[in-house]
Image (cartoon, rainbow, N blue to C red; front, side, top):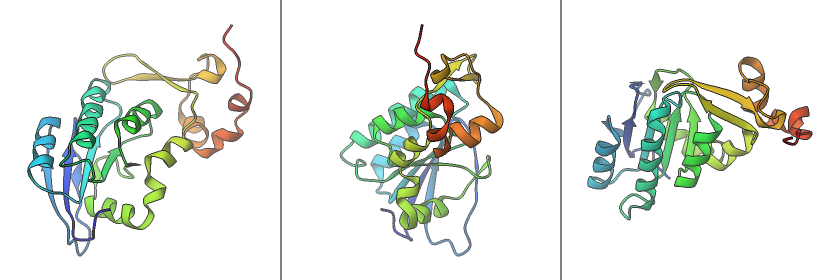
Length: 194
């Protein structure tokens, strides 16, 4: 776990978020802008927390970010360093791949273009389980399916309804991406493929 005075590595991958400093900030942070520079910085100096900041909307970047996570968690110099993904929106497929790659924590940025590294470190110290990747995965419906339309857009459908129902807006955010999906009529009675 990171300490209150930890060195934090912020890897801004495929998007640049403004870094906001908390009042009375005591942590120091380093910022990188590519998977290669992130891996280099992480293996050159010891950090108390590594934050991967990216947009799940950038479909082309997913593979590189997942591979970076895998490299960080398999490297003897960084495998014990807590790894947090700061994302712009929930994405079950990306969360699942990051979970398999060894990611420890995940959270959606409240303000899409801003990140507060010390606040994230503080959240992990105080409420680590609420942002732990296993808890996130349990909140997202397992029937969410993502079909790429182009490099930045996806069609989100309900696999319990044979991918015939397109999801978005209120239903996606209030049911499918929350524990409310456990009470969803489609989740409870999925239609088998015919």
